[in-house]
Amino acid sequence: MGGRLNSVRRTFEPLLRRIFHAYFLLVRGMTLGVRAVVLDADTRVFLVRHSYITGWYLPGGGVDLGETMEQAMRRELKEEGDIDLTGDAVLHGIFLNSHVSRRDHVAVYVVRQFKQDRLPAPNHEIVECGFFAVTALPEGTTPGTRLRIAEVLHDRPQIATWR
Image (tube, rainbow, N blue to C red; front, side):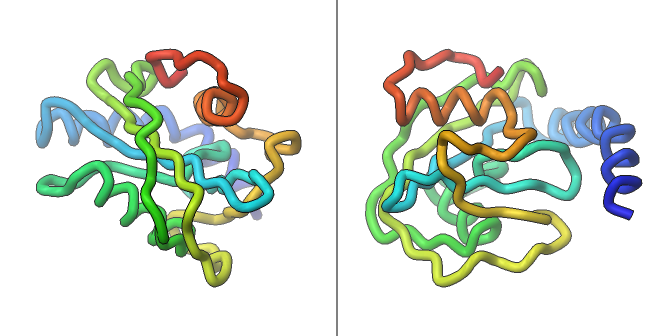
């Protein structure tokens, strides 16, 4: 069943992306999202796998109208990972996500102080999540996710585009 669902998702993923971005083009001139590099005490990074798109990603999502980037990041961490910040998040950078749209930008935060009582159960949006050693990221971790992790943990120079 899972293999068939993945096949269907991969088939319709490009169309769904276009539909979502066409909708946002009508609603907003530019889209803004947030993601977070959440690192635990062992420097493992928290990643999520969505039901509607292939790959492993840093947790995050869109910034709603009337919401700051930090508020959006906190909301998304709670929704996707049951993560509550206990200290300040640091803005790592803002990146043009041109492979999705020429008007999509993503703000990336680094989170080191947080609490998470448990990993959340899979739901309609997040089918899997967890902390992973940087040397053992799951297969399918996206290139943009890998770049952001390398920038944060290995002092690699920032690349202005998400990739």
